[in-house]
Length: 254
Ligand code: V07
Image (cartoon, rainbow, N blue to C red; front, top):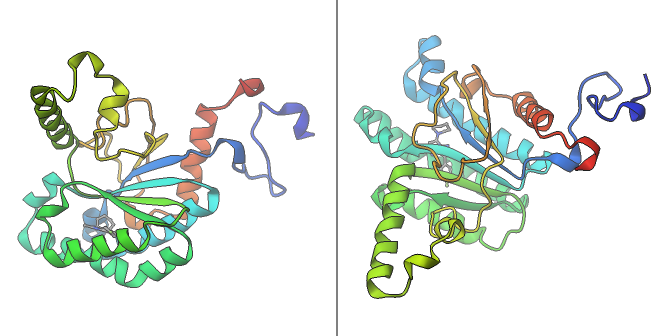
């Protein structure tokens, strides 16, 4: 079969596996990294072992996303609801940003990755805040992949805070209610400057949004997998992107 006569069919590589359409890579991928606790439980390990393993996967997926040409990667690392977990687990989670950066910041730097965060980081332990701020500052001028960690993030909280500030601006007269547009609201969210995600991935078989990027995911493609985050491989990311491309196929380039 000569593929160029069947451009509407899947693009094939020499070994017959589907390859990615380089002209249709999702610019922004957001991931809910779920299933670390279950992964550990399945193995008879403490929950924190799952988080530790999950952190290794972050390194891997950042590299792969960069390689396939993704421009923005948002990772849901800690939600506003996660404070309800056992104190010891929260304590462990809070050390992960620092641990991750201690090991990975030189690599991120080398790969021209720019670190950002969304979420209320003011409530995190001082050492965590310091490590994250350092990473954000030191990578501020990088022009490659934007690696956006959602840390103590909640979608409704983000909207409430935005409306509060907007309300003040209206009361002061600096914003006229008539001038409120979708763009004006977008630019007042924590994701200002980032495009909306093209693709949302959630691992571990949960089919819900859990308060993640409520405004920003309005038009995104959703892809769910049973794979637990510590088991999530490069190939799973590629599969998600392929599925995205099937859905977003541009017939005749329109
Ligand atoms: C966390 C590992 C990944 C699976 C999900 C939960 C556990 C990386 C970070 C991180 C955050 C900010 C930053 C650099 C790295 C992280 C938390 C949990 C709280 F600037 N992984 N990871 N933060 N997990």
